[in-house]
Length: 537
Image 1: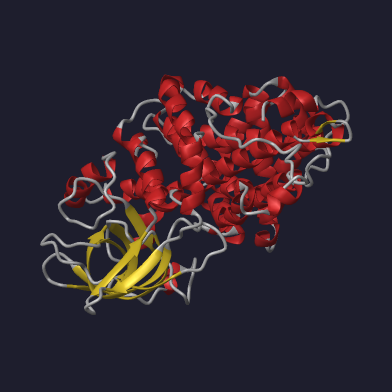
Image 2: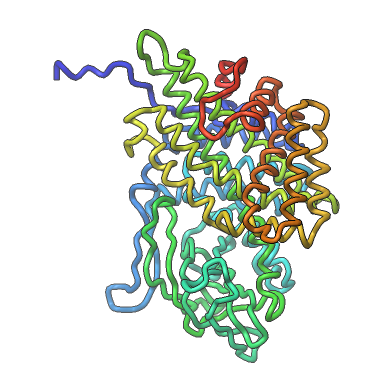
């Protein structure tokens, strides 16, 4: 139509090397001993930045999973079908080692490289990252049982992707089914039972309220045995090729995470293999929980990167009042502030990844114990607001599903919910401070590496130490723990940026987050070089 000439719209943000366009990630790979992986990660960056991958990501979130409980003859099959776009996305992620490369090829920086791979894929399509994360996180649990480890770890380490359910295939993805409707995070309230079959296996019976990625090859499940809550490996297909009883009752209609299926399942004398001991199920599965919490940080960070990159792209290609949006000081400040958040999240993600490598000593393990919980709380809490502000930068386009930030806005809250919502994680921090004081000592030692660099930082840390002391001495420390966790998280982020980031980034972060009103984006301290920071987006 003669009246319909398209003017002043940005071009699609595709056919970009998502690694090369993310200087904070490139710099972090070198800082944390994963420079050896950069060439391969450029290949990943080009793949996920391609128009083809973007189209698959959009399609996978539109043509969502569908459940078939029975075949046409009435046989129970309990299968979920996915669009081929989803299979291409997750197949590429598995091929690149986004799931278990840190375990399969250990070396200094291995988990840093794996984190970067995971974040690059999750930046563009987040739903598939759920089974990828659970597969990664299942490894230390399965490794506790020598016989199961011999059978399953080679399959977990495989970079082949096969979506069919078969006992004969050489690869595997894992899921988990821990929570129940009456307990949620209080897994000790579980009512699913596990009864010994007398042959070394157990029979599980009960209902699981959340079972994500139900087409995975095996699951870690918590159930009550005579000796207490235990952890069980439950395969979907038994060794003889028959299906293990695993009735998918329905798929959850979720706010976000649409490409990934989450379900309710019924177990009815379902075969399970005990890992660890009866009564020690929480202790057995805790390593999986810690690793999935870490991946929640990565997932939120990946979302922040997508959000600020899309906002910056739009601002550079859209004009208003005679100049590009990015050249208008108010918009420059918003984009720069969004980038500060993404930089801080990237820094803690990669630092935590390095602390999870095989060469971690006792001090590193103590540090990661507290720091993972602290940053899981904070980074995941910041994700939804970050996405909302970035979406607003696109105006009405941001609110339309044709653009990726609507999907991202719906996606970010799940990271704060999964593996412990805010109160659960804050109470876990309190537990660590009380029972494992060495974790706080190690955390403090890491943060203190930036002491003396900036007096604003030093004053902030003094206040944090006083708050921790007051909280631990309080009659009801639980009520103070959210404030404690926020200060711990910001202190660690500031310390890392002061030591590793460009001075313009570190100075602005300290000014905006430690001394200013950093809760709403765009309110940067006077004198901030917003243009230089926005350029990194």
